[in-house]
Image (cartoon, rainbow, N blue to C red; front, top):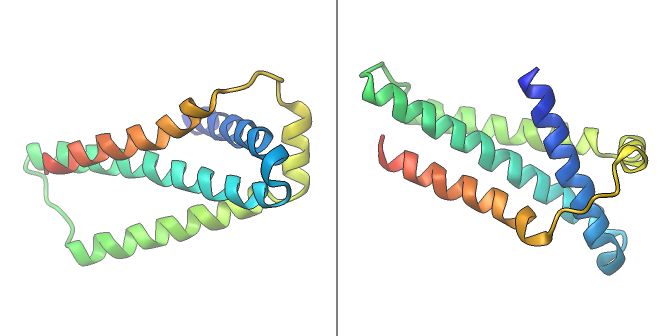
Length: 128
């Protein structure tokens, strides 16, 4: 159920940014918004990974090697890009746009979410 709530949150971010950028950038707004939502998801999952890594290091739980962690991270990033590319392509985007409530999120809030996730991830990374 929690992942469903995250999906709804990322969907609302996607539609809000698409509606903000479409009048200014036209067709390039779709690509820009896709990169934004991928960056936001990667930052959020990086925050979770750093939190659990810091938590595990405080409990002296065994770690994986850095090489394996880098490979897993690269695979996760590629899977997130592939998932979002398939999810927000064409028909799904039109359905989300039609179903979305016409409330607008401010641009500063859309920018603050990935920035805050990245800053908090670096703070947790320092604790490792």
